[in-house]
Length: 343
Ligand code: F6P
Image (cartoon, rainbow, N blue to C red; front, top):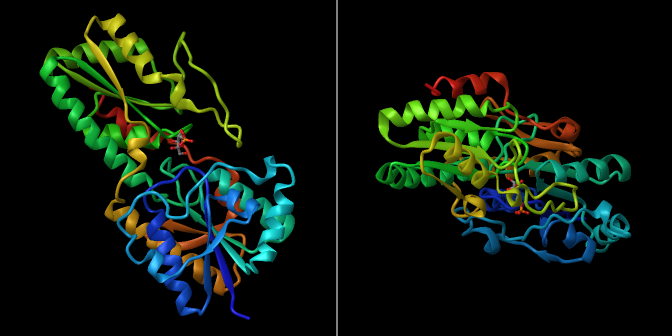
């Protein structure tokens, strides 16, 4: 019987997913596997929303952001009878294996389904947060940092004209990779990330010093930092129990604090979902493509419960266990690099 592979993209979308899906579909042809597109993540397997996916659906998508399959944050373990429906639909559509593209939440569900239900799953690491263990980078990260870097250039132009401090709030959840790379690559004068506590007095003194030299200053903050006496907005949770951090308004709170402590006019901007869309960068197109192709090789070799991963520029496979065991956060070495430029 011809193997049928179901492809699913779960969690937040990110650039690089379409190249990865395309990689799966093209490589599947080499093994004579059929491919089906599961719509909107786990939701599609719960509801039986699964469509044929062929060459003509993917051949023009390498330069497209988002995911042609749609995405959702639906967790089948949190839906009444969700797992039973997933199993029933896998049977109904005669799916021999699944390629699941996701971050820690989606791949965490995959790992449980592999271990508890014996599902034949291989993982593909995607997330703009770059916080999955076992892989040097996840696709989506490079593009979203590139978008944020461009935004910083705009903030620099207007900030230097108006002699202001400009604060950019970026996504990244509880890992500071996006803020760190955005800040270093755009010449920010201070970077705030969740992994390392900020000394706000030191930061403000430093901004005053910088301001004396160049009459403006740039700050990047991760959405996930903690601030003293922050007036928080609504704290909503998604189905994986994650707080929607963007709604806390960290960037604006930070701008007000800087303004109060330094007396310098300060403005904040939130790049939000704009940094998650648009065409993938070269790096994300290549990484997505390589991971998609690798996933099909893993299925052909019956290496289930594994995930394609990038290590020292090679695509290898690691266990899903290793990938989701703990969040990959910014380490001391990277933080020390950022601090070189706080002068
Ligand atoms: O995990 C990716 C991410 O973009 C985070 O950086 C951010 O906190 C979150 O998703 C936003 O989620 P949503 O698109 O559901 O608002």
